[in-house]
Image (spheres, helix red, strand yellow):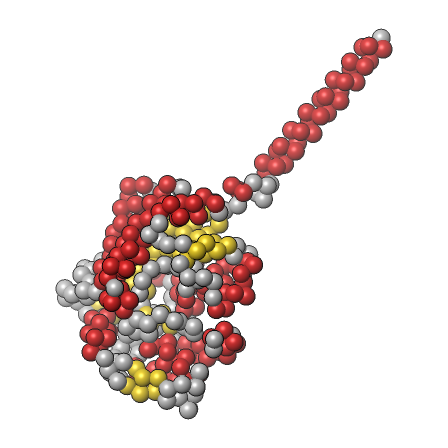
Length: 360
């Protein structure tokens, strides 16, 4: 009898042990923080750059912990948020590094913003090929191999140039760029479309006009739109390397971040155009209008014009374009928020608020 009771007690404790183990297993499985593989994250290439750092700051504010991939170290205002990001210093031309990064941080969404801009691409087309062509291929291939759910691509209106017969540039307008930068971006667009068709990658992107905001460091053909505001705030004179009547499609950096997020949040069933024009501030303002607007806010601004023929040649190709972004409006609710005056006012406010970083 005693032996029977002991056996029953042992079985009862064993059953209880199995029950507790099973309960722990299911609790662990259900808890999204229990396994690293369950923690999904967003990767931003060019993450320490101008747009990348602004997007990262916005995502952090929404509770995300983005992964920043860049050849350059964490810098500027991003240093305040180093504890809230994961940073990987690496090259887009190294597929192994990209694969390791996606695997290590269980990335399921990529904002591909990294690459070489217009003037650096013209100066060094070989480096542009490595960063913009090979780098985009590597990023798409890494995304395919690691089964990334979404790929957001930053293209440019500089993909439009020769052969345009209409006064208006639509999303389906022919793309025959003459610059190395434009050529590399058309390649990225077409390769992304191929990966979408062949591998069902959720690829989508925007063609950005000139992006304006404080803290931009890299010279490009339309950088005067930003530096004509920032240099007077630094107390320095600035020479615009364009003619006063030059017009260039422009968008404020906060509108860019909002556009990238809106595009990413849109239901895939609503995405039919895939790569979208963004017109920016419409109608485009002239360099003279920009200077006049700055001077009303900063009367002591020392701004002059000294056109550079190389820059003017590049600007003429995009300055004459009227950009239609009706597809972005209808498919995912895009609209520009900042006018010229609002952009200059907000730029000045942002610069003053974080002047300790911008004045370094």
